[in-house]
Length: 300
Image (cartoon, rainbow, N blue to C red; front, top):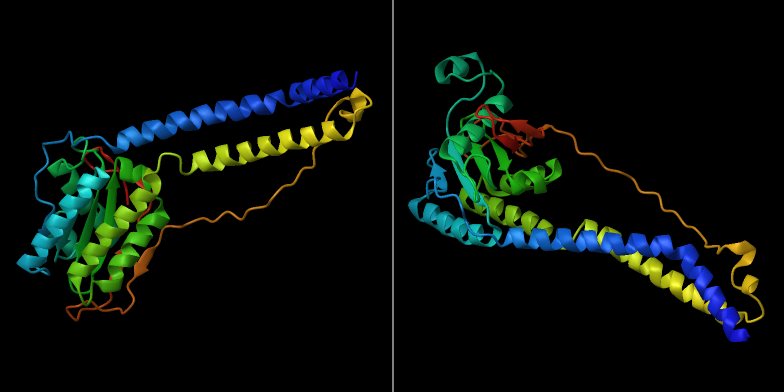
């Protein structure tokens, strides 16, 4: 008789908890499928052969020939690992004010607007993107060395656009700003390294949603099962000794989290002067998703 009471208690516990077991199973399947899909996508081969092979465009002439070759080789190595295009573009021209607008045909007199347009148009016109031209996977850093308007702009596309938050874009630019005044090559190596670190952070198959959902649910399930087994072992007199009031009771605990938000802003560089002895320099941290003049989606 005692055995029957225990068996009945377990049956009722499983009946009351069955919805949680179903939820855990469904979440596990969903996260597994998403993780495998992301892993397979991360191992794809290059499918865009329309873009030029060049990745380093030093129109501002701040790098030596040897440094350009070093950057090209390093970019080629990282592109094979990350499956994205990584482009560096330096210029030395005014991108702000009415005079610059009239001379170069900009759409705006604003520094940020024109830096964005130059970066996006360069990407789109050359059809960069690891998996497809125009809106393929990749990132471009534009650095303007013009006196008094020194600053950078970063533009992302495809998988990089999806992976990078505005905070990530700021992180890349901060790393560049650490070194550009004294060692431009080191600054651009930092650009590549930071992009790699941020992309590898998101490339793990079960990171993010998988850990956030599966692990807590599994732990909760193990706790529930061990809890009901302990209850069943303690009482052997009646079914109600295992299921008080006709339903199981569980203690609930909730945690409060503070949500952080990142705002778009124009960042002034640390020293207020560039390596050529010019006036104040600026870095554009980006303003979110936008569509370029050619119709491609970017984050900047």
